Image (cartoon, rainbow over all chains, first blue to last red; front, side, top):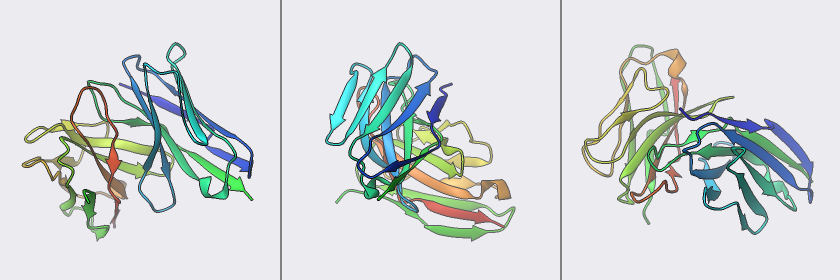
Length: 112
Length: 114
């Protein structure tokens, strides 16, 4: 089955700096890669996703890149703000098996 | 507005008891999923369903069961609760269609087995 590894487990940045979270996956059939943000005590919220026919996708301060050959994808947050502090999860799935396999999460702390 | 709800939000039960967690969505989504979240493990798939009367096991299905009698509901049953099943449980749903689509999560149920 699919295995998703996520790094780093914790990340602390200064407000205004950029943050990068990286994930690798094992199943070459995976073709959908969402990123979720989870605040303490809340549900995971989808913030951005990318499909395997696209190499990069941006939405304001967040972007995701995908390297299918290397089987890795990354989340980039620019101009970080204190409200970006949360746990971020990457995940992978494919057309046949629509359930998500999640990484173990990255706790991002943005210091004001 | 369409939504996905879970009940109860918090539950304390004793070892060996049967427990059922409810999940209800009003989006008319075909796909529904149950995950559990434990510190250090992210979210792990318990069971999932692609439609009425369809159920499938996920990676951590032992000790859990689901049934899908209508589109809106996918209840999760712990047959005989164990302390290892203390966790936060999230239900999610996604629409049918070609290719994988966005999953939306319910608010979660915090279950404590004593």
